[in-house]
Image 1 (cartoon, rainbow, N blue to C red):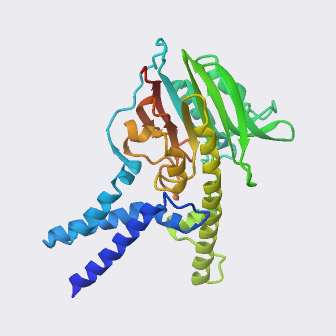
Image 2: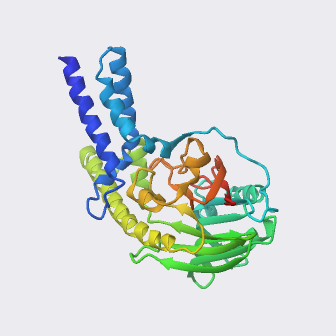
Image 3: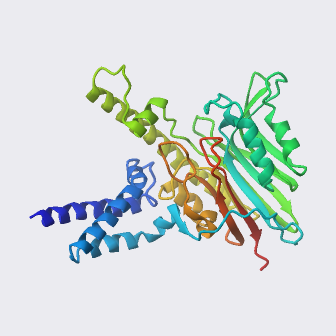
Length: 375
């Protein structure tokens, strides 16, 4: 009897795992709640692996059902874990070739810790030292901030130009407040930028992307820098996800839990629908690029999502090409997954993918080497 109950539970989780595979093909604009299964992919995978082990211990062939279900979506696994186990390369990129090798980085810098979230006023300086050491050829910043107020000590745009080891060209697109505080995204390049454009998403919220045409040797690349819609969770939402903490001011525990769950689900719904609108719009710009493309940015979505599927459909994922271990890029409690990406054209080869371990932002920096194939 117990085994029959376990088998029924197993079948239920197999069914849920199979549903999670469909999320890549169904836009949240039509069925938004499907994205919840995408978020649960890792959990559903773990439960099915547990049942495989359980049935093997019990010497039952039932393990084949979960095994087949996992194999049907095996490519999803490589979106969150890779087996290359390559070490972080500290070599300098090769600039001498007609098709030079470039070091590319994407980094959500969380406005350079402007509000001292980490209770350490040295974070900004440490971040600059890290960037100086890494010295990428192209770097795409999200949540960029710079101020022209001389007494504010946050002239980040000028500081970056000084500390990086070569003359940089840069494109900064920002929302400017008070004529001197600038917020947004920025692309820095050691190579000439011959053209750039900013594209606003139609939905309110301030999310944008920019593309920059970068000339390196005989090659020209179109580098996209994007920051897609965030979930906009509140501190109380993160406390609930992390510790099931509903605070001391709630009327009752049950009411507090329900209120927090409704808040989280509502924010998830709004964000996944907006990203489902933004991703196809950006993909249209990618598809008509006259140059090989490199896409960097904070997608605010995971590898099993519709957003990732839409943007990576005709591109390679640098993590899949040369990453190692788990690709987690977000430090927070949720979504504690890979949400920052470097994608690139199929005629580009990427190597030495690396996720930094520096906790200077709520995101880890991500970098790799890219080079256009000579054929």
